[in-house]
Amino acid sequence: MDRRQRKTREAIFSAFIALLSARDYNQITVGQIIDKADIGRATFYAHFETKDFLLKQLCEELFCHIFDATNHGHPEHKHIFNCDAPDSVFLHLFQHLQKNDNNILQLLSCQNNELFLQYFKSNLRKLVVNQLPLFAARKSEHLPESFWVDHIAATFVETVRWWIDNGMTQSPETITEYFLLAV
Image (cartoon, rainbow, N blue to C red; front, side, top):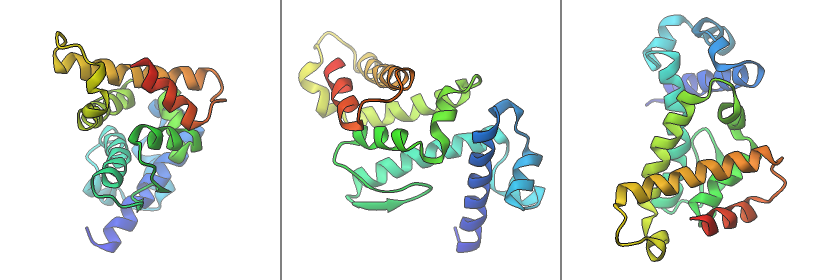
């Protein structure tokens, strides 16, 4: 992707994220996104097939960012996020949630969050598979791996919900510890 395309894509992401902070996902139209991003309709559709696809790509950016920091050892990395990545991918996610990077909390807690949660859980499962050695000592030999992966991902999602519902008063380090103890 050349620099111009990357800038356009970032403008679309920024516009979408700004709209998400002000209204519910189902109330946002492609027209509003292109107006806020100051681009043409054809330009939007050259990058994203639909608003749902834009949401999917936003979710994938989050996980691409996490995977790049983890798999390639880049201590500083940037996609739509910019940070100094910790060693733990789960701590990394909790840190982004605490900072509410790109209004991710609105996506997780909005009334119509099922599409986002579907993408989030799908990518989270991939992340868990990559981190299975961390949980190996806790896994019963009687559990199928797919069940174990789903259990860990569900525990992470429920930990995030509990943290949000309780005002996110715990630090990312503490909530990561809670998550790891609960698995």
